[in-house]
Length: 187
Image 1 (cartoon, one colour):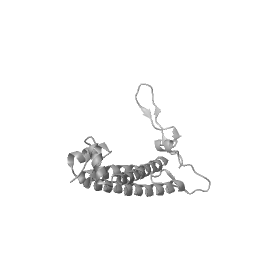
Image 2: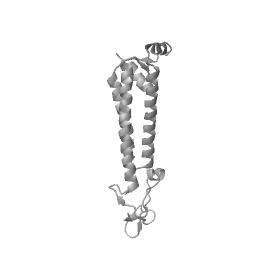
Image 3: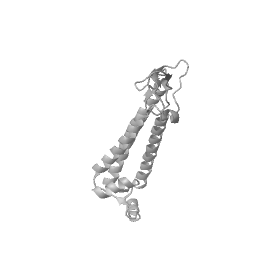
Image 4: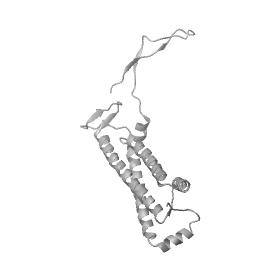
């Protein structure tokens, strides 16, 4: 996109407070956005298909591929978060558990409702997915999506280990006795 031409106000007579808008014109330089400075501007490569989107930003093939990858990662975030919620509710309704998230533990302790926990989880995941969707064409959006999927994958592995360790009721009783009042259970 070429620079636009705009009339620039030039100073009028000293002390009058007036300015003239006729006369000089100058070319405006395109402004770099903060996200371009942080994530690196999309550079045009030889032979690469580059189009301009509605906002005036250049959209290259690589940023469209990145957007597709991020959307797949966002779907994985939703699936892993839903699995985390279902496993959490399953443990809370059966043997109980110690919740590592202090906000979720507070909500469980105060409300004793699985619906409030589900709403909290949906709200936080929705905010995360919404922000990452807005950044889907940027490098930092993809990095954030990969980090979220990595964290949720580690949490799934921890759930697997936790479930295997507490298979017997005797082990659950030992953990409940040593929990220090942090054991949570829903009716």
